Image (cartoon, rainbow, N blue to C red):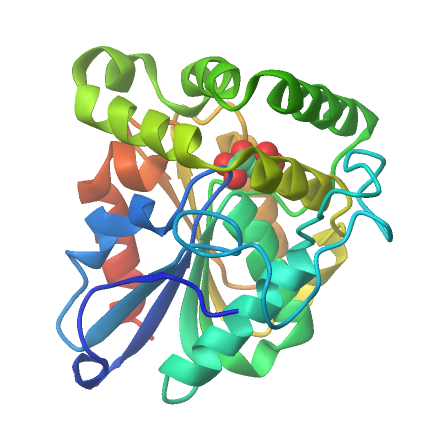
Length: 279
Ligand code: MLT
């Protein structure tokens, strides 16, 4: 599968290294534009549209998404499932193709779940890890039931009701009232996500591994970032995760909710660029 990739510049720019940004659900690589345009000299940023999202096809070479084998009962047997392992293999293939040596990987929320899977499968590809607004734990029964309800809504009515329901949880009240460009950006990404992909990713997230036991031995320098007002993966969750990772740094992004890199790019980029400077 050849993903569509949002890039900060050509490969020659990566004299200090490359950063691969992994988007959350149900967005695409364009959510990382504020980071791609502000990377420090010597760093090249690449933000793929994950399989099925943005301009990337859901099928093609690599893993074969299939609801027959897994999907926590959310995907029907004839519907595809996007497992975190499948998405991690796609990111691994992109790193191998585009980077000269191990890269920095920055995953937000679902992107963090993918990053955990990448660390389990291909740790040699990662020299630094940024876990943004994400969690190490897997879904509990309530979380899986909620995903089942969302999948049913998407089958019946598409992604518009999902956008309406999600935006108040994703963005702070201030962003929603004072930053219409960000609201519009988030809404347009959700509306553009194909229903088939949304259901496939819900099924994949619902059946993801619990990564808590991996935290004490994560084999890369790690930065944990969280929006001050993130209610989906709150600061307390991020703090517990950072405490379990040896020498991990935690940065709380003020005036931001779950999409901290979009809501407060200045503070997010300061944390990101500081981390890159220390590698
Ligand atoms: C995300 O932003 O990727 C989602 O909140 C992840 C999830 O639904 O668990």
